Length: 355
Image (cartoon, rainbow, N blue to C red; front, side):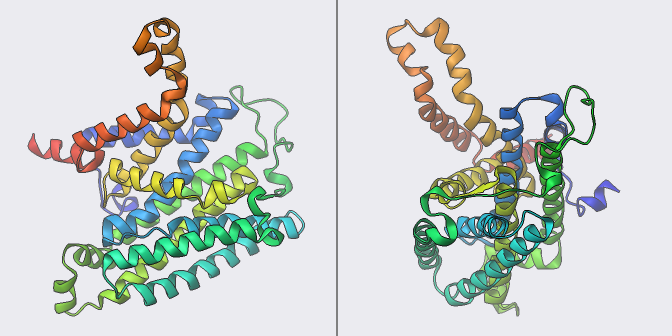
């Protein structure tokens, strides 16, 4: 049953299996294990990043395509939900229409980008997508009539998803069962479905062709596969997955803005997560996303605790200051890439094979 659910792509490592089980259970039970607004926001952000990174790994890890326009599709999903919900009555119809319009826009844009650009060399395709991403970010910031400009768009959700809606009079294990909790589990199960669907895609004959193109595009073309068609299809699928991830982010935040969904910082974060987790592994996207979001949100808190006893030490006190958290985050990433060149998943699987 589990083997079929995972499309016969098992972790192939006891430690990786344990890590995945802990991660999935932690995210599934996060509202009850870690009550509080911040912890719930961190868990929801980790789920959104899992969906986004999984979609990008289809491009980079499985097909060998470097694209910088991925956050554009992420932003299209967020703005699709926000624009529809702000211009219509807050309802499931507005959410459905917004998501459908965003998916259609991403489908057309990714198809045009794929067909027009994927025939060129990799570096030129990367530069084209970078230009497209810059243009989309500028448009989102300047078309204030539609996107709210730099301020973005706030919107209301359907009644069932609002925090004020309570389904039970008494808390369950100390947690209020309200619309916020329902929204979290809507995000959780949607992301779980996306991950399982991506596992099915990459382990299908289509996915095998993508990996063949990644290894040697000329050889794949020589044996009869039209690489442009497969690369374009990969680009479209990745864009659609990213659009759904953006819609989930907007749904959770009840807000869409250029900095939260289309900034280059998000693109850099996605690249780091793919490398840290392991390129060409769906499980790497899951593990890497969770570790990255946890480090991003709690490293500063840990440093604040260390500052107490070490604050008076001349040099060390300055280094452990919470204001230096980005420095240490960078050091952690450099160390992880150095010690895990194939990513966390690759390292765990290779260690398992040596035994």
